[in-house]
Image (tube, rainbow, N blue to C red; front, side, top):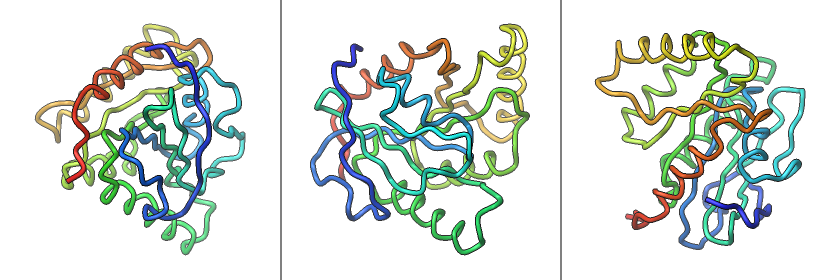
Length: 202
């Protein structure tokens, strides 16, 4: 897929305020500082479409970006940022869950995982919640450039082995690097395939 345009449309804190048009939406989520904004910028070919920051937990809103005037990338708040107050974490958790469960236009959810880390309880529990609620999702390993090729493959293989202890089959899996653009074509091709399917809004 060729990206000809990508532009910010709206930020909000409620699924009720999301765009009311019927277009496929692909939401990106992950623990704070997993490289979500960098990945969105890499996919769209724009350096500053999504705001990046060295400070974790910056994304606090549902952010919609219209791509090629035909489908949306949705940047969701990161979860698991310990330095937020309990009240703030609860509020952000509600934003995330309300969008995921109630946004009919969401075609799939891309769950980002830092390839350098072993499986974390918070991510595994989040995947379990997605499975229990029948939410279509794919796993996107990020920051592949931080490891050697062999180490990256070993880390992903070990992660998948852990998942298969609880899952009968794995969701789609992508390996990416925002630095060297690895995985860009595979992700965009996957989105392109899903764009051909009828939008399930009921």
